[in-house]
Image (cartoon, one colour):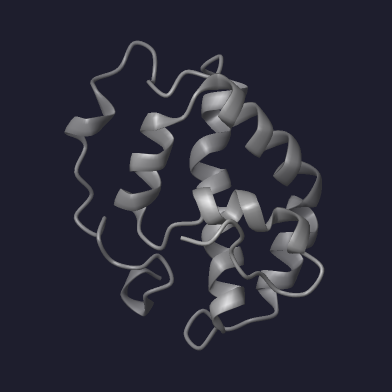
Length: 121
């Protein structure tokens, strides 16, 4: 993968994070999350959180089906943030969820479908 994912205009500064975190499926995003360090979570969180209202407003203007590749990358970045934020906010930067079963045991039925797939709405 390139060092930067292509994002819509105005989000180029998040390209390197998107290249790492913005995977198209839940299973792929989970694999990144499970391998992340506390520093990785902190970097991702501090870069995306201030931009989240803007990201969500931008995404609200696009239909789920029919987004361009840069728009899909931004959508996947937002999904990755939603899934990773608790690890920074609640779990002390741990990739594991404290007092829970191993996350690898949870197998979502739609984990290999792209997250912007119509069937998931």
